[in-house]
Image 1 (tube, rainbow, N blue to C red):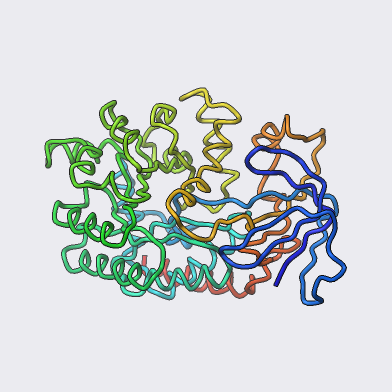
Image 2 (tube, rainbow, N blue to C red):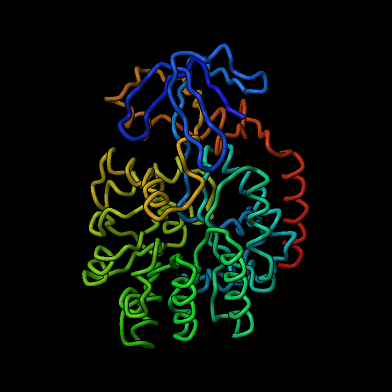
Length: 423
């Protein structure tokens, strides 16, 4: 069913031109949109017509690196002991949490995360999931939840050796089952220091066989590099390169904070992408870096901190002032690079019929010349009024249409309490 938007000011996300127009939006993951002079009088009665009332319409957003399994962590009990370093944070916070997840909790996490993404204008999520004692069916559970809300996705399970061979092999099996069922995704790995040579070899082969890439945390903390040099006598990116991980289709390397010049050059000469997650890096006190030296395949994520890409972009801009002198165009390019990543690697769910309506009452003039100033200092997720995903209206007047918000949040609270009791 065709959807129409009338009385819109359309902002082209690529060249930032402003056009007062009506818009025709086609349905489906392969659908498009076009600017029209007026809604045809002959349009079917079943068509949906949205009145933008002079508000701004532009392409919706994407998240390049999420951890939806952390959704129920907000407000959870403190760790059993103070965390003195990054590995402690993993052991006593995140690995403790993910070990206690079951499929119901995963479903609640995914539904709530999808709800927050939708209301913040995100219609495509790249997720990196972990639940060592609820591996089987986890990716299918997340997919079903995101499909219910109407969010397109690229999923993976975070395979690791940290919980033994049996759970490692379950992760490989879940990944293979998901990808060979025809669903788009990655072969996920945690990080080099929890991935042995046998697992790395199997993961690269599986990714190659399924025509996809790896999704792995890379040198998020110096401990990753120290372990790799001590155990394998090489640095992390070199290890991944030697294993064939940089030649795969659409690999994503999260963080990449502690790389030397050789590693940066290997990245530049590969097809791998870097996912930048500044707020998480600040929260975990693992350091910052100058991403401008890494090439132009950099996109932004949230690392599970939240589901607000405008917030991520602002954080990356403000930190980037000190680390690399990033410009308005530079941060906007990284914010929008996920669309380039999706298109270049042939993934579905991010065509032109993914749109949002911004109710942004700017106190000053906004146009093509100064839009980026408003993007950094003005536009917030609270200004997202309506969202169209794959041609389907899923949020209208800040209210989710595709599922019941109250039911999702009630279920999440129930599962969150259950999880906290186990912690």
